[in-house]
Length: 129
View 1 (tube, rainbow, N blue to C red):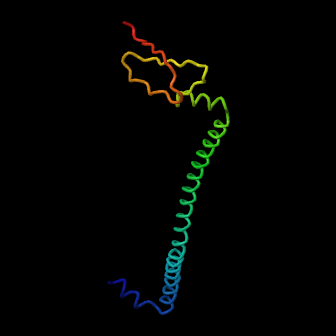
View 2: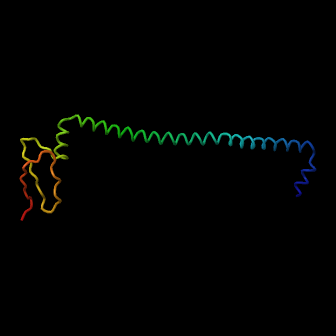
View 3: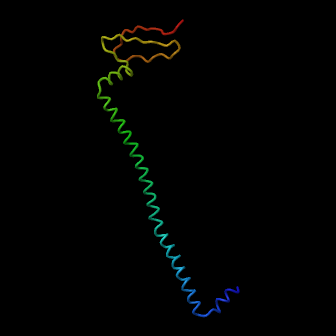
């Protein structure tokens, strides 16, 4: 309380200087708060946009990798040797002059049936008895 009364008894010129200094500090603080509030919105949008761009770039990289895999697969499908191997492996197809054999393991599950023409197949048992 004593300091407050002391300010009241200061000469008028000293009070004016003190008020001018505090006015400058007050204006600086208010101006800084206004600037911060005006810039915080655009800055937040900028940060969100950068995060979105990073997410889109990562998705683009994944899609480009998947596209490259699919292009390699298309190239494989144009190769007649690859088509022959896939037809033999997955479809069980054979040439007419070939004789297919089915080999069964003693305790394994049965093989899927061959597709295509129904050949006469000799069966061998691999089990040792």
